Amino acid sequence: MSLDISNIAKSFGRFPALQDVSLFAEDGEFLALLGPSGSGKTTLLRVIAGLETADQGSVRFRDENLLAKPVRERGIGFVFQHYALFRHMSAAQNIAFGMRSKPRAVRASEAAIKAKVEELLALVQLEGLGGRYPSQLSGGQRQRVALARALAIEPKILLLDEPFGALDAKVRRELRRWLRDLHERTGLTTIFVTHDQEEALELADRVALLKDGALEQVGTPEELYHEPASAFVFDFLGDSVQLPCTVEGGIAIIAGAGVPIVGARPEGNGAAVAHLRPDGFSVASGEGAGLAARVRNVLLAGPDARLDCVLDSGEALEVRVDHAEAGKLSPKDRVTLTPKAVRVWS
Image (cartoon, rainbow, N blue to C red; front, side):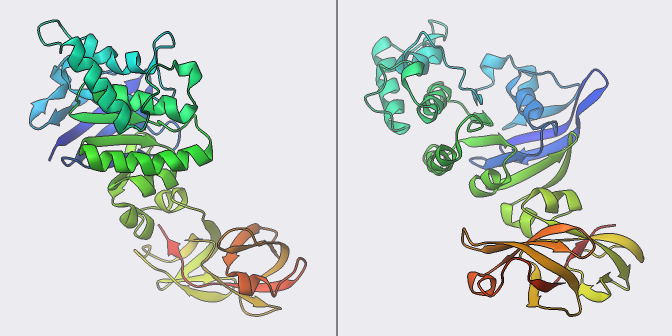
């Protein structure tokens, strides 16, 4: 493996930011650290980079102990959320900064630095913009300059801390595709921090989901989405619906009807919470066996239609159906919602 993180712990006063985190990344892998605010993902990135000191544990890259090395000797490129560009320097000067800051004995010639800057400007699709200052660039262009600056030092590992967090949704989508293509071309081991599950699932080879400073689950995007290890993983990775149920003999009883439980079944019987996706319902007009509800609104935008419903028990939930099915329904219609299958955790 390329990067081996073992038993990392870090506390700030009495707050445990990381709790015995162990993780690895293969050579050339794109690994996403995903989780809500305060889950420890940025702290872990900063420990790897040397911007924070771990209380315990080790970080090794190709059998070298990174934690024993000074920051500048770790061979790491770091990209921050808010670019951290020097405002008084042009794009080209920002990109060249790390190369020009090396000791004279190992510094490249000025001609070589300029050639490298032009190569990187082309790589990040900013040819001809090297003379512009950060204030003259868009947010997406500034982030590309920040990435080029991180690549200029020829890092062994690339760390990105929510690099698209300050950008609008359209630019984020464009840069996601571009970053994945850039990763394929450079082949760098890359660790990407985000709180956006769509971003992580689209970009990463594997995703490490953190909660309260601990790893909740690690796997491919498909594994986390289709085989969640906990209710937290299921609910965090996409829209979800929770319904009270009673577990009896491996079956969830919801509104008097038995619903199959998929995945790991909870131990024992009794009251529980069933989890399912908004598209996990059958919808029938009128009254029937299932969850009695009233349609509050029919939303037809997007690939799936959405029914904004209110259960007779008072709970509001959104159900996704195809457009043909939604076209038969109107606000105030009575419907019966029947869960197809659910997940239940102990």
